Image 1 (tube, one colour):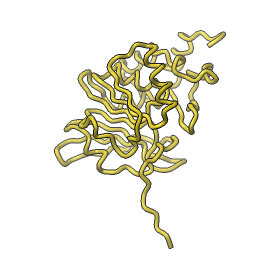
Image 2 (tube, one colour):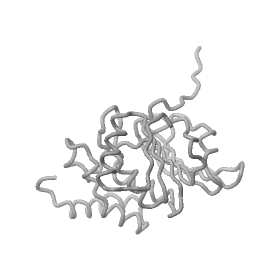
Image 3 (cartoon, helix red, strand yellow):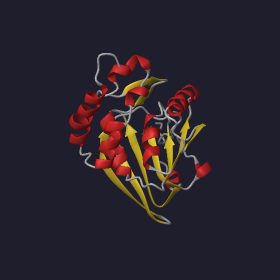
Image 4 (tube, helix red, strand yellow):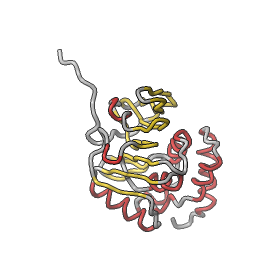
Length: 220
């Protein structure tokens, strides 16, 4: 990032973007302040690493704006012993944040090129408590279920019940549900063997996950 003081830019990101967006958890603020986001951003967008925007990753995928990443982390309330499923590795940046907060992250990416790039970025930072897999997890990934935390980094036109079944009792999941331009960020918590609560947090707009389930369409 030529001619940019990364420390100052990162500090401004936290104070001017993240904190005003109701992110007040000091652990999350500290994590966002120290994490080298610029090292996960594609080279062509490196100077925009700390800008309030979605950064293109190619293949119609994006790296979420910093304030959205931080807010989702805060809402998930990740604990040190949590087993985490991340659907959509992307650049690997969110994977690194999840790995710092939890015990182990199973991250699944459907696009091989992005999976390779994420693996490279995470390997460069020697993050060990992760398992990266190439696969289609938009409709679930029960290979390592149940999970304490589940995060979908792209939107889902429809949230199938079977995804929620992969949560442990007490587990939390965040899904961005709906269609552009207004999607609902939902926090789903499993409060019993057959009971879940859903909290609508706010609205946003993100590209859908590849092969995500679509609602049935009526044909007249």
